[in-house]
Each structure stands twice: as structure tokens, then as C-alpha cells.
Image (cartoon, rainbow, N blue to C red; front, side):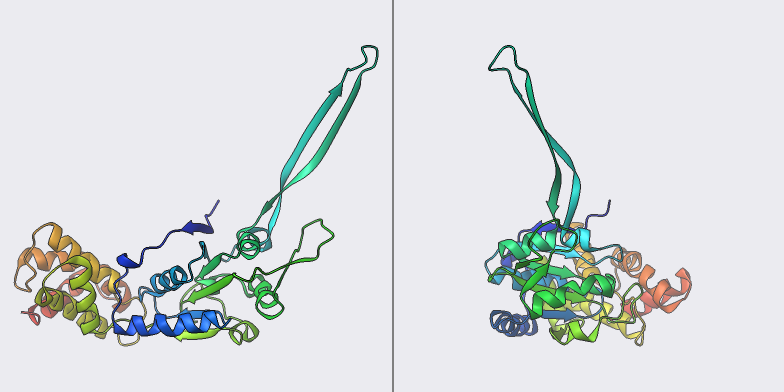
Length: 301
């Protein structure tokens, strides 16, 4: 069974913030505290989830991360009956009388959304547009009426009220990404949507230098190379993200590989980590991708 959600702990010290991210978090915190859910949208690897976690951490509440999935349904969100439990009582207080009472009840397990709503958690709904719009309709009641309908629950209560401390943060990829559904306007109209783009060369350089602990000139070489590779994509999807930039820097530091475009070990490292995205995104052969990366590496020296 697919794991659709998880409890998470956060640590601001592990999240390097450039000026753009600091501003984005500051604005987002104001919006959330005013009562408006925020929605971070941007390409894969642009840091949306990390920003969402950092924002959730600032709200000082337990955080739950839930991943969008086309199989997600009300049973996952609200809960479902998971079986039966029985209890049996035997009364032999009077020796000549044998009395047995047996009770069978259905077992109910709260879904993660119901758990978060009841307890006032901060819910991060990551890649929410990968869930079917019909599934996401349930959030309209939460955001508009402040209630969660209890579909499928055999109870006199048709809904539960949303805890006053409950907050939700959405993230998604643009509509043109594979596996993404068109989100209903009624839901988007209730969100404050903020765009998260790839970092600039200066921003990536700062993050690499602070996060990995390499010299600024070394961070500049790596960020310049990855930025040049991205430019080759010309609006195509699948360009290498900052994750790849960090991977190159971390491996180079750990293995004492000189960060120079003329160094063969560094060049091979860059080919290993960048070639797959180049092959897939530009639809070229591995040999052509390797040649392209070699040429771009030369520019960094």
C-alpha cells in the first residue's frame, strides 16, 4: 500500500535561506496568519516542499505531510472502518446460571485529514494537483465553511468543525507536467498562489557555499555549469534542479575532487549527474550529452 502521508519534524537551521526565500516566507507567514492558505507552485526541484516545511515550522504546530496521488480518496482523507472488534463477558456469579454477553463493533480509523483537522495540525498537501479534482473537492468545505464533511462515517454528526489552529499549505507543479490534473477554479480561488522558480546563479552560489561548506569561487563554478545546462532546455521540462547542483558539490567535497572545469574527475562527476536529464530533456544521445557537458565545463575555467 502506498504511503500517502507522514508526520514530519522540521529544523530551520538545515534550510538555507537566500533573500528571495526569506521574503517569500515572510509574506507567506502573514497570509497564513490572516487565515488564507498558501499554494506554492513551480517546477520540480525548485524548493517548494522545503519552503512549505519551513513555513509550517514557523507556525509552531505539529506538522503532517500528505502527498497527492491519483488513488487518494475519501477513505484516505477522512477514514474508514478497518474491521471488527468483539468483547465477551461471562457471568457465573450464580453457579447454576451461565450468562454470556458478546458485543461486536466496527473499528474506525481516522484518515490523516480528519486527524489534522480535529487536532489543529499544520497540513502540507504536497503535489496536491496529482490527486483527482473530485477528491480535492472536500477542501472547499474546509476553506469556506470551516467544516469537514464525514462521508462514510456512521455517526449522527454529519461533519466536524475545523480546529482554530488548523492550517494547510499546498504545493504543485504547473499544469503541463505529466500526471497533473487541472485544478478546479473554485479551489484555486480560495488559495493565495505564489510562484517558486529556479534559483539564480548568485542564489545557488550562496546556498552551495553555506550548505555544503565550499569556497564561493567553487560554488560559482558548479552553479554556472548547471545554469548553462538549464539554458539549453529552452522551456522544456526536466532541466536539472538545485538538487543536482547540491549533489555535485557534496560529492566533490567528500571525495576531495578539485572543482575545476579542467579536472577530469570533476568533469566525469558532472557527466554522471547531469547526463540523464540532458538525454531525456533534449532527446539526444548519451554521447552528445557528454560532449555538451564537456563544452559547458570548459566555460567555467
